[in-house]
Amino acid sequence: MNHAVAEEVASTTWFHRIDLGGGLVTPGIDDTPFKLTKIHLPADLAGQSVIDIGAWNGAFSFACERRGAARVLATDWYCWQGAGKRGFDIAKRALGSHVEEREVKVEEISAASLGTFDLVLFLGVLYHAPDPIGYLRRVREVCAGMAIIETLVDAEDYPRPALVFYEGDTENRDATNFFGPNRLACEAMLREVGFREVRKMDEFYGNRMVFHAFV
Ligand SMILES: C[S@@+](CC[C@H](N)C(=O)[O-])C[C@H]1O[C@@H](n2cnc3c(N)ncnc32)[C@H](O)[C@@H]1O
Image (cartoon, rainbow, N blue to C red; front, top):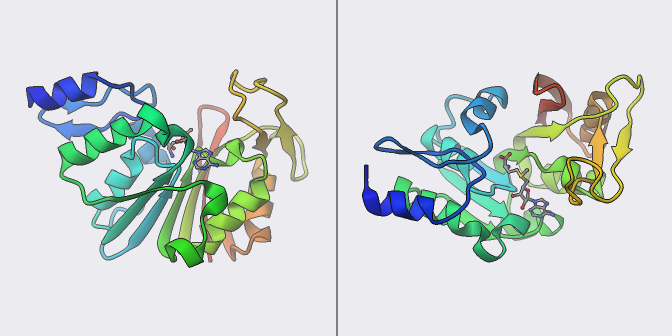
């Protein structure tokens, strides 16, 4: 194990568990390797361009690079403000990664400013949106192929498209959680913003779902 890297890793807090090699795995609270199996990321991304919206420590950006993506752009805002980007920077350096990065709010993502991408990752962000349709329009605009959407879901017993609104910090004591959509709402909203086909790919933890959407 590289002790200098191990010291750097220990100097910050982590969300993702990222294997940096040499027996060093970042101590995130998130079970990232498990989540990676549930999002059904294509095994071969050779030549593809990818944008990871809300990348945080970058585990899924690095996974795309490892699978051969020609270009990966990691974007985030809230968790990258202040000390929050240190984890991404440490992992990127330790992995010798060429993942690009841009501090940009979802609300400011556009094809005009960033271009379009073969694959858009939108993992764990939808329920943080005060304006879910608006956020999904940003996802659709920069998507030239496929988007992977992973989200909290709620109201699964309601037989029509529905979103539960979380006042204040009533969902998981986190005031940045706004709406929990049900499966029907996820599928309907993705079609509404212009995805031609939407497939539910998986579910886990009893309240998380994964969709693949195609332009
Ligand atoms: C729950 S984390 C998910 C991180 C990672 N995508 C994953 O699935 O493990 C949500 C991420 O979205 C980012 N985020 C939430 N709202 C955002 C916004 N409006 N603009 C940019 N980033 C946002 C947060 O900063 C955070 O890094």
